[in-house]
Length: 405
Image (tube, rainbow, N blue to C red; front, side, top):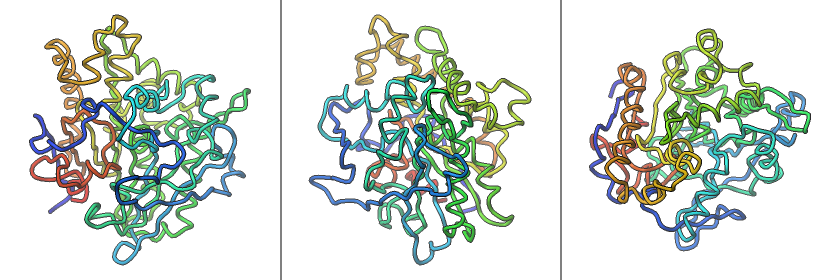
């Protein structure tokens, strides 16, 4: 199969009946102490952290000033010289089982989503793994694209697989310091992590994939060409952004909630110093933080995996409590079967905007797409979404197969 195929769903995914759609879930479990505890099912591969000692001299630090880190599981056999580097999403500790949905949503959204846009929210992250390596878990599960099982991850199971921890709150774009003792050093963390991995053998990679989900997916879009530049010409280097297409969309009250939020992120983290010069020369830094304005200028082959009805965006940027003061969207957000005609029309309008923003991108043979209609957010690390028997399919291909192709 030549190049990366383009898979675009223009209607509901026909074979996703068993996929665990977030909006239809009534119960989940939040495991904060031991993310590698999986009662009732086989324990996945679990990997411990490595702190980047060289980051100290580069001032490449987490929000609280502690060292950043990563988790590495070595490849073997035919994958010994291939690498997947995955930029962490914010809720790695969630396993879908038994707890109240409100608890799940509180942890999921972290009262500010995958970023912190003011001193108060960034200070709050200092006391968790979102802002400090002091709170990194002893080990975390590697599933989906990080799994070491061929029947769960056919193309990447024997590659060197890395997860870079997300502790800067700015999608690895910041380069500043706050008088309250906050380090906004996401850009330096990214550089320090890549240099560390190159010294660990990635410099000899025949092929390398930079991947990430949510805030990490957005970071992939911002760092894709930079990642490629670490390698000599002739190496196969590509990128995968999962659930990173955060749109500059109008919310249910007619406002642009996410634009306002991102403006705060860019200002606080001083991201304008690290964002694409090519983009900033044409539009303002906040607009450049949005992926829809970045993907046209990325030169490295990029695969975008996203739901057209991304649940994070519905919950945190479209139908927020502030935008929905009368609570008209409460039932719809919990279960899309309760959405009325006007709400469904609004959601489909968001879907259409997603597809329109990706229209030109999809025409390039070097790029790839898998846009399904599951109410979900982040699918590459989910065992049930990535390559299970009832995972979403488009054109008779599961997500793992499409990305592998």
